[in-house]
Length: 361
Ligand SMILES: *Cc1c(COP(=O)(O)O)cnc(C)c1O
Image 1 (cartoon, rainbow, N blue to C red):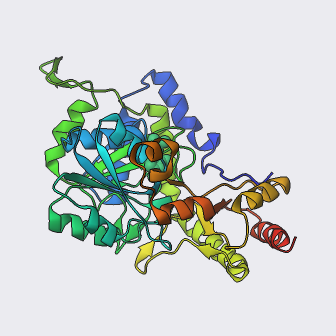
Image 2 (tube, rainbow, N blue to C red):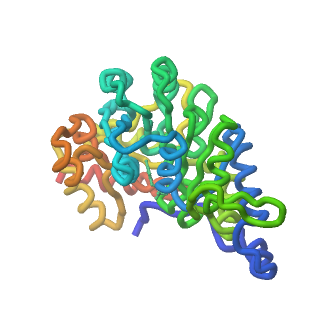
């Protein structure tokens, strides 16, 4: 079976540090998490980074940092993993779904401007499947209307537009280290930002609402435990070091895929000029006359794992029953995108030939 994903980490790489952690007995809030966050700050070129248990918890705390209340509205890219809008529902915030571009799969600037109202308290831009294309334009619009911007960069570690890394455009940026993402710690995430005004908030909220003062804890607020343990930090540190090389490799594989599949009518997720794309997922829009689901089944029968691109948030059973209005482009992309295996050693020729056989079946 050609697997859809394969993590870029082995036991050999972490063994020594794991041993040290077990020997010391220091399993959380230690030097490795500090190192991982420092490395992340450096890599993204941003002032603050806090590890979390997931992108979902990171996004949720960001909404609280911006003091967004129930009944406020947040405009959100409609093509994403449902966690992006689940965090809004959880807090009673109304998601206003902005439709996406059919070539980049990212929020359309004109959709954003059309949906801004005086109830809009923030915008969540999703780097769809790792693609940062258009984030700088969305940043401009948010600045113009003075609306805080949160980046759901769950998929976008290492991607950049105009030399600025994903996560560094918004007031707050969130990452995921789930195994489906390029850099994984099993589960995990991070929130990053430049503005010092958020520092105390995250420092306290992510640590049970406590400050450490004169040898004891003072609980000055209520808070959470969304911390990432030390072993996970080791995994993160190792992968971050080789991330740029991995991204280069994936872009080469992407080029080969495009060479094989574009002539067959497959359309790749497009990127803007001045973009570095981490190729988090190798996604194509399938040709009009074929069934994407049948193709996934056929590939599976031929030993190749594949899946859909991602989801139309306004089109989930939950959203549809609550809000009715399903966004057209996002729905089209949910139904017609295909994710293919993409990592070193993957046999792109075999996969492409199998797809060709399906087309002429
Ligand atoms: C994976 C993903 C999430 C959720 O990440 P977790 O770390 O699993 O919580 C959120 N948003 C997007 C766009 C994602 O791809």
